[in-house]
Length: 354
Image (tube, rainbow, N blue to C red; front, side, top):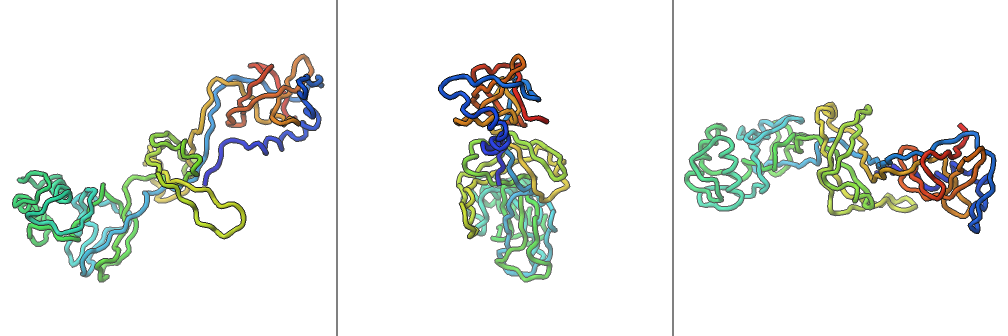
């Protein structure tokens, strides 16, 4: 869900409706200046400043979407990492018939047994992991040689399993990085084989949010944002990913317009320690939508809705007031950018009585 940081035109008109009736009926028609009126009881000063327009977007703090890991072969689940455990390269996610299923790092999923004579990206991936775990004596490339088989036997000896020199499908799980166990789907003692055993995510906290398609331009990767945690603590963050495919929310069957299409966005939290108390929590992400430096600004409440359309200000000079048409720009923190003839820094404008 996206919440706009700017104030809508309808709201502005409602704020000023009483003054419109008294001051601006026919104001400026035919190019004639409206007659001067008595000065209003309260005024504000036109200031020169920088206005920053922001947008607040609701998101969820967590560890990202979970991926299910299944046991590839039949057997009895004899151990499994607990939810919340971070599993590193070379460590066991679970064990079937006491034989560990080990995490290794890589982008190519395991899809076959690996043995002498095999070639491919998965072989190179296996050899990179063996080298990282301290096993040497082979060249890291895409060929499974006898030297690779020797290194595999050394690795198997360390694990306490049969030293076959080959890696059977299901004994290794490849993931791009270390993982965190998000949930456990099977219990020790269960018969497994093809079904999910546990779910894993990344290890770093992140914010996932859905951004409406018209706002995609303000959430480019690398954009700095602020993340408000439960309790009000605000921490910096950076947009890491913006989805390329828009998703249309399902029809809820209710009358009226459907919800707008959105794209998924991922935000990295710069201070993970500040968010350490939350495994999952709703958060608010503030994104800068635009900035107007060195502009003239007045309180939003000073705007008058003109009878002929647009907005004006009640400019106070020499104890009298006159209505001047203005153009509006950025709205921010109760102020609005204004420009127009007779509007200058330091000028006094009428505001509703406090």
